[in-house]
Length: 486
Image (cartoon, rainbow, N blue to C red; front, side, top):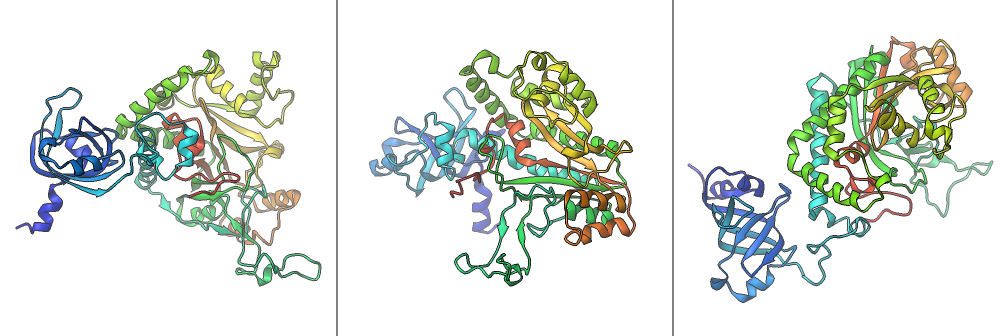
């Protein structure tokens, strides 16, 4: 026998469930926020469970004028009544309102998210409210679904989820662009006799930073658990104020013992196809809306700047095509002899082997030359990180990058250098302190083996799947140079 409380909970419905109902329902309650209120009668209510609103019809003749005036865009309502067949076009069912309670008022003159078109810049300035718009509600539901798909993919395949440190004393990338972590007072920082900051008096007794990657720690766990993955926040103090960079973002990093570069490429391709397919199936309505939004946005661009593919065409392009595997050397030859390079159309011209490829080169290979996703591998050692396995030629490493249409590089990975002596020599050549990474070197002393992994910036993936063009629009509260609002 249900208690009154349980019965009440049972009758509470999500908008999504009401819209997907197969029959009329009596005595239901739905809670949400007003999107629009027309003719003192029709409330478009949304609770975030779906991009679609449900129409709630108020008996305005028997509702006080005071209450009707408080039903404004953004107000939070609790509505009880019956789900009935709709008399109007556009929806199968609507809610016949029998009881209405205003849970939270919204001042119509001050509420920023009025039902009209807002610029993305305006919405970034109101990041705490922008998720109430159709576009950002859709983006964040897609982000959530992609996140779940990431965990499901690895968990179904026997990977173990590892939480690597956010505060670290090592720089995995060797880039040096890190945020420092300290408990020392800035006005009275203790100094050594040489005048340097005395980190021995700091909280951790040494210099520490926010992590740029969980890879090195994940490698140590892969050498015991076999296959692991991290999925967490990472930080770069890179002063890049572009549409593709964030100071705080999320990284997906699997590491697998006994996998060589070929197996690593297989894993990355299979993983990407899985999470995109899962999200396409689960977020059909949101993706349909985002595709329409993208088409409208493209209309305002010159013809030569418009994408050749719609959003769904891009997603199907990745799901349905085998990724073309090409060596860096082959790619350089293709780019050097390409029309854009010969006609000096590239911003960065390709003259010689060893050049670091830019987004324009990566996109040319994917969109114009091969017309499918591309995996480039065997890069010059000089432009890649110290931990990547050196090839027999002594000048390239077992690195791989996956390139996507419209975005360029989305995944970077490699077979890791498992040979102790070679790794030490590479670290010395780059000036990386062996004592700082003694624990990392230990894994090459005790039961070393071939192993590989990759990193995928989660926001880059969300950017691709949603069709958005600025990475600041696919994370709830973007952190960028001169911006740490909210």
